[in-house]
Image (cartoon, rainbow, N blue to C red):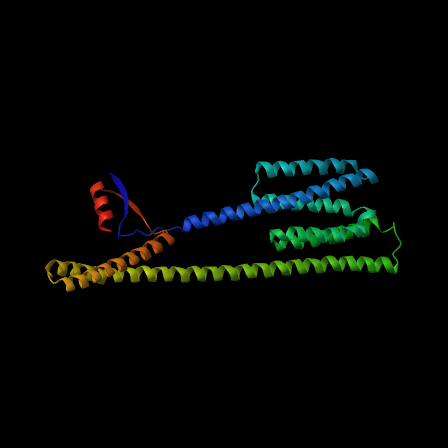
Length: 292
């Protein structure tokens, strides 16, 4: 009969690779979830933009391009043919192109600012400050195009128009700064949390090492107590002393079992336990059960 018994000499097992692999799997899943959120919002915005283009008689060719880009984005997401970083930048570029197309029409000039603010809030889930800055730049480039080619002769620049324009320009700039500030604080808090977690893990490891070392050191005197008491029981004939020695022996065995439990706990918790295959006979199993 073959059984499994734990050896006293336990081989340390490094589980760093497993932790790193689990971390990267979590980050990949989180990244894919963020990409799905971005893609859903981009799809919603593209469909509305195509419907508005049809209703207002905007460029028909742009509608075809928007639809093609939307279908291509979903194909890339479903097939996962592009890496996560490139896929995110592709979605961002398509979103900015759609915003530019939306903003270069006279009826949408003053609607672009709130839309761009919502897009910055959306892309804040990616925690990339460079994307937020590019959103602000794209908005200002679109507004410059509008003032040069669209609004120059289309509207009269009254005091209301000027103040409204300045308000929208300021809102986008302030919103971009606030989103970047939030991202910066979030990263700082994550770094602080990671350091605290590492410190707690190190403290936990030291406590477990201390328990393991103390348990190993206690086993030697306990073995001596149980061994000497066993020898004395064999030589002692007086009944009262034999009962006292039996009590000492049983207390030593109970303490030895508790020490073994502590060692088992620390070895299992730190993934340092190793199982080895050895010969074991049924008679020994029965003898151990009767003895205990």
